[in-house]
Length: 347
Ligand SMILES: NC(=O)C1=CN([C@@H]2O[C@H](COP(=O)(O)OP(=O)(O)OC[C@H]3O[C@@H](n4cnc5c(N)ncnc54)[C@H](O)[C@@H]3O)[C@@H](O)[C@H]2O)C=CC1
Ligand SMILES: O=C(CO)COP(=O)(O)O
Image (cartoon, rainbow, N blue to C red; front, side, top):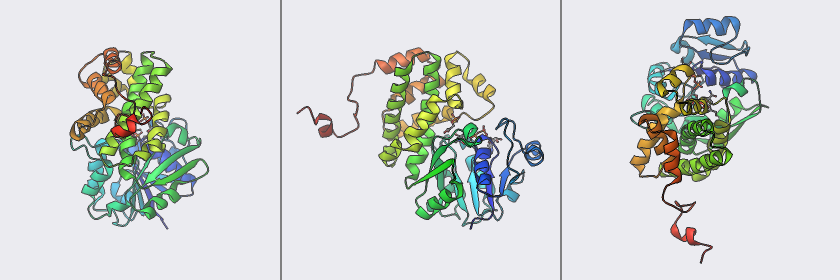
């Protein structure tokens, strides 16, 4: 029985996941970095900056002490931005029980090392069994989850019992949780969909229309699956919730910070201002850089990622990037399949 459950940290997604746990009758300890936020959550049962107009369950209590949050916890849910994962994982190491169920719901890679979040956790938490690390991902905007709108996610772990323990912890009538064994695929899909979400915001901002967005999502999925497979993922994972599911949610929703960032860039607003004004994490920007580097490392063709990289970091005009994408050398739709499969049907 998982008695003490903690969520790190009290941003949008951490607060939404804490709400699901509270709905399931769990007492949740939510780590917040500022005393003001702790007081707001404990006294007013709100977390206004991150989840507007929502009254939180009294079962959610906040603390600013990582030690208090993690000590004796049976399950710890890590929902820090990817840029903070290593630091927070190293800080909790002295307090974390080695057999605690460790779940992360972060969508990104570590900048520089290009490591997946579970790899970063494994390095910083060597006492814990990495086969029991769980990643939770899928189409799930915090804004809808706190309103108890029907949502589906996937939890992946190498160890089936760990995945099922995470499934038991979160599943309820509005939050349906599926299991999967493909940790790499679920992590890669969750991180890379944000790049395409940014691209969808750009596409919509440039009024390119529905055909262009459908193309972006479909060809985006193709390059996500290409890199993911090269990194060891099961290609089928990309047809699931963490793959096409989250692409649909991110590319079609105005809740998406990545979509909104892309949309603002299309209006000519500088990236630094977009990020500053958002006041919340836009993982897709750093992930575009990481994926561009991963594509080079694994020698995988990722044209959308490359063009977006050039728009974000090389000052390329989004219209020129779109023209260059459309003008690429002609190719087969399933170019990554073995050549005998490609010619099949034409013989
Ligand atoms: N918001 C959403 O709907 C969803 C978000 N996610 C993912 O969850 C992760 C967190 O995102 P959100 O909660 O949405 O972000 P957010 O911007 O709403 O909140 C971020 C939180 O992280 C804290 N923080 C920032 N830097 C930190 C650091 N270095 N160390 C510790 N804490 C730090 C902030 O104080 C804030 O509480 C991201 O990887 C995101 O992609 C995943 C699914 C849904
Ligand atoms: O991951 C998300 C929905 O599944 C949230 O997307 P954004 O970070 O773009 O808001």
